[in-house]
Image 1 (tube, rainbow, N blue to C red):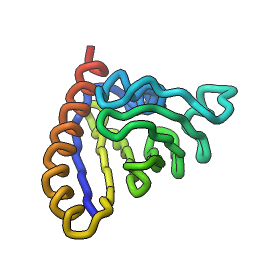
Image 2 (cartoon, rainbow, N blue to C red; image 1 turned 60 degrees about the vertical axis):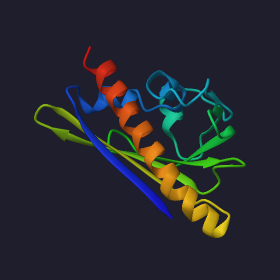
Image 3 (cartoon, rainbow, N blue to C red; image 1 turned 90 degrees about the horizontal axis):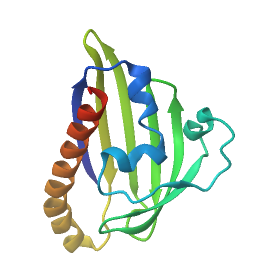
Amino acid sequence: MGRIEKSIEIRASVDKVWEMLALDKLPEWNEEYGDVRYSSEISSSQDKYRVGASSHTNIRGAGPIDFEITDSLTNERFTFHMLGKRANNTVITYVLQPIAEGTRFTYVMTFELPWGAFGAFLDRVGKRALEKEAQNSLEKLKSIMEK
């Protein structure tokens, strides 16, 4: 199983960073995601973060993907599973920690590729690309939040 973990310090409050973690906000700071639409009922802004909430998007290189929130603790932690042909074993967790200058934001992705030895090779090659993508997304989020 592959794992990517990246952190960044953002000069913005935890609650402001939290607002940008709603699934429909992902395309604003992660260029890999297409338009994200909730497939579960959203009656309030808090519903966007509740366990069981789901959404749908297209991800560059992976095609149609559904997300389902599996863990959420306001202003602290947010986890969703990616469900789709090329992402069934992918889990993303965001962790927010208040620091003196704002927020430490940590991105954790775990994934597993099929195809045995070929999958293990792709894991090594793909992991570098995923790490670069994650770092670029964190930098973009930081830039948005610190304007």
